Amino acid sequence: MRKKDLTSAAVTALEGLYPSAVCSLEYTDAFQLLIATRLSAQCTDARVNLVTPALFSRFPDAAAMAKADICEVEELIKSCGLYKTKARDLIEIGKKITAEYGGTVPDTIEKLTTLSGVGRKTANLVLGDIYKKPAVVCDTHFIRLVNRLGLVKTKDPLKVESEMRKLLPPEKSSDFCHRAVLFGRDICTARKAYCEKCPINNNCPKIGIK
Image 1 (tube, rainbow, N blue to C red):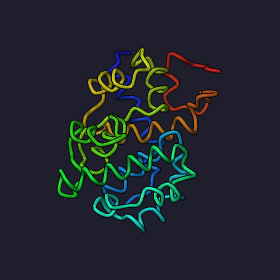
Image 2: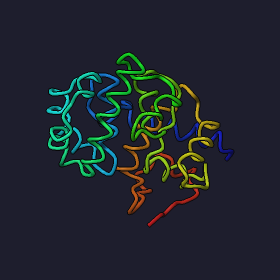
Image 3: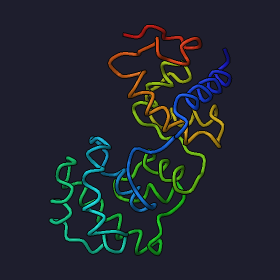
Image 4: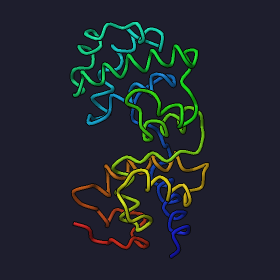
């Protein structure tokens, strides 16, 4: 099966398995999603969701975060790990968005990746979920899935993103990434692939992964 056809089959299969393609991070606007995603580095989304209500109550927008006391931010996000680096990044993000973008989270990868601690994964998530632009969020589950399907042969996030942009329908790319995360947690896990439960197993070259 051609890679384009296999990609299409995977998109359709995961749409059926997970009709609601939603981000597991809880947020109400672009700024909150940006901050929550920065906090999620080497931390579970579930933990981030426990931390952000108090954080956003104190610092609901970029202007407030720009003026935050770093010790207070550190204390609020301490359980997320790497809290000193993350606290510094959060305040710098607030300052730059306030000073350079009038308090509005930018809507291009080029501008988003100039923010402190923000890489392409975070930028793509914001672009897809907030601005509804074609986006490929290369988290570990997504990278594992597309490698197992034989769609790519690299674990380099930038190369995976570039290759998958050629294969995924632009209007479905962001939602497919969300579904890949759910699929990677439930069925095609890092420890074991539960191929008997997989809706794509007829087309997968890695049947019976242990």
